[in-house]
Length: 402
View 1: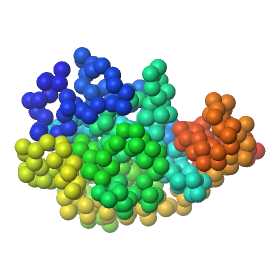
View 2: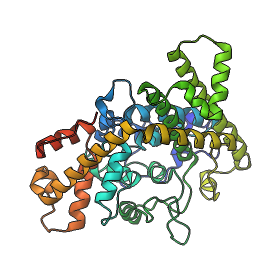
View 3: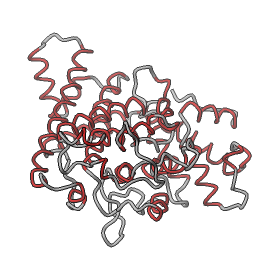
View 4: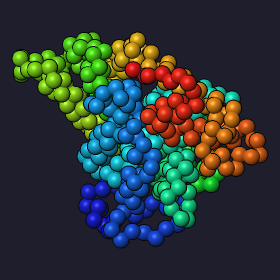
């Protein structure tokens, strides 16, 4: 099975035939590679299905055409596969990482994450990457022999470290760790199945991280335009996008707005993808005969945006932050969504009887930390819709989030 892929896989790619294995040993599949099995398990998981009703910026009923976590995830996977194919990497691993990267996000996008982090400020905080690891190693309960999905070491490594190492060689948390300390869920799992937290992840994880940025920027521009938060020509504030718009207008001076928007987004994705491929090919030249372990020990991220695209990325994010993420309408919804998450946390923390019976199991000891982490796990697994329904069940007044 594995030999079918050797004709295109580069030496520095992550080879499923040389996987470091799974926490719980399983027989290999006669029809799928190890990373294909990981991808399939992720797609069939409950947490993956829930992404359909978890939002990015807008809440789920804001409109049929706005992105959800699921549509975003599919877009990331497509971009990651394209880049990986061009660089000779393992497309299936890149896809598995793209499909799993948002599994730990709570309802209401980053708003829900911020609200849970505040609720848990004295109990280890909340980090969506750590929560994603917990989802795939413990919270998914589908198999008779183990909790979680029993994914390969390489997929778990990429899930935890796709944004880079978490600690230095001496064990000091790196600045990239948002919570300032490595989340406890990651440390607990590290003791059981070490993920080499001071090394960089394989190239497929690095690709998935950039694919996330590319998809995020492009679809947030699209959603912001659909919501009327800004007009297409206001994007000329970003020089990179102004150049693209000028090209489109010269070629089609009377193009209708909807097609003009799509052409802008299409060209934006293309330029970022092609730029990453060119940079990756150049960066990987010295590793032509190396293997994935040399990549992990390289001491730097090898797949990244070239300088001009890094500048464009910063410009797009700055524009979206001011005009979309901090727009009055989004901020109003954000405040209401934060209230919903906070209210739910307090309701469960005050009276465990508000939790479903199976989620209360094992909390009889009165351990405050264990109780509050369990509550966070329950809330993080909710969809936007379920969170609002739960709030209506427990409270007399629930925000409309419109």
